[in-house]
Length: 68
Image (tube, rainbow, N blue to C red):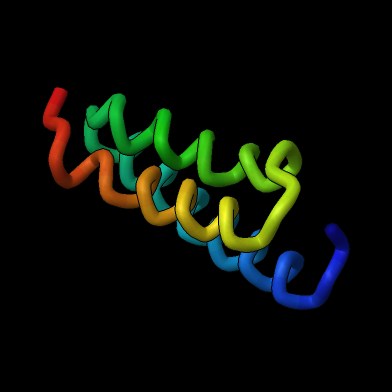
């Protein structure tokens, strides 16, 4: 679980999640804020690199397709 690629992907998705969270906080976009929090937290609970990438891409796409 603690391979280099796993740690780097966790850093990438955590950084993108921080950006989504700040964007959702500045503009009243609840979906971006929730997805940002999820992107920052979920790498702690996912075991494999490929599943982390798949979930991260899905969480990044949700605010574009779901407008609340």
